[in-house]
Amino acid sequence: MAAAIDLRPRPRPRFVRVFPAPPRQHSLSLSPRPRTLLLRCSSSPVSAAVTKPPQPQEFIVVTFYKFVPVQDPRAEVARHLHFLQGRDLHGRIYMNEQGINAQYSGPHKDAIAYADWLRKDHRFHDLLVQTSPSLCGHAFPRLKLRYKPSLVQLEGGCSHLPLVDPSMRATPLTPSEWRERLEARKCLDASLSEAAGDTSGKKLLLLDVRNDYEWDIGHFQGAQRPNVDCFRSTSFGLSESEQEMDSSDPLNGIDKENTDILMYCTGGIRCDMYSTILRKKGFRNLYTLKGGVSNYLKEEGSAGWVGNLFVFDGRLSLPPVTFKPVAGAAAAAADDDEGRNRSSSELGRCYACGSEVVELRHRNCANIDCNRLYLCCRRCVGELRGCCCQICTAAPRLRPLLPPHQRYQKWHHYRHLDLGAPSS
Image (cartoon, rainbow, N blue to C red; front, side, top):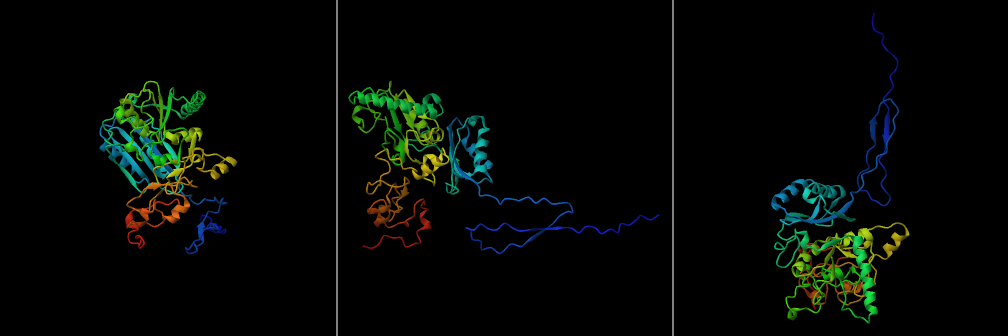
């Protein structure tokens, strides 16, 4: 007997009309109006899920370093380059026989992936990795990952220094231990003041080993100002005889056996390096801030610190709240007072006229052959057209006056413009 034929009408396939999300009111789209999409669905009920549009990637800056013996650093560089293929990182990553020094920016996923990969190497398992936000994308123009004889620039190089020997470096203090030392120093200074200003028995010295222009926008209260404009020329404690002693050097004439010397820099690597030099000079009680100022601001906040922190990337200057965010009214107050703690009379002065600057952020001189990194008040920026002094305004190669927060590019971006000095 023939099989029965089902003549009941089958349900027609349903269509769900999907409309793209309207653009935000503040954005302007010049693209053609998107077409309506028809999606074929089954006859069963449909539960529509709302898909959020992809969000912009969060960019961060990552810094770390480690002094450790590396047998074949050039092979290590090749291995690192292979791992970073396809990952969006910009910055400076240097390796040599004494370890690694890295500062780079990138999307959070790529930036953290590289640090996590490096930590899997037993030599770098305890790497202190520090991160901070980069709100405008990359903080570096490109990636430079290569072998470099000196992880930090220093006159005479550093390959001869015992950097991989922890006993030759200063004793690291955690941020909480550092804060305790700062508070103890205040008590010591107070007791010395009560003793008719007699400082001969001083037993603790706070030493800033950064560049002087870094000190200008932020430093620990009571620290000794760097005596050079570039770390590579640092000469603290290097006098060979009394005849060579520099009166501006706070290490000259101190008791090397009984004076505690507390050294700090941005991330810690310069202090670690320089402490080996001082150790060879006979200084016994050397201490460094573990992870540098950036780590301290993250863990302890701005206690004892005044101003902003200078960083060697496109951001240039970061307020303490960047490292230890606060919420609510405290955050609003921090934004209003961003980098404007004026408890130091030498903090934030215009290079041209000496007046107090509103914003603790350096700029480069518009004269490309000068390129000085300096602080400048708004009035002098306009009058000197972005130059650091009147002499530079007559230079033959002048770049255009840039608004705040912008950095100059290479000369070839400007040389086709008519930027020569005006005729007098």
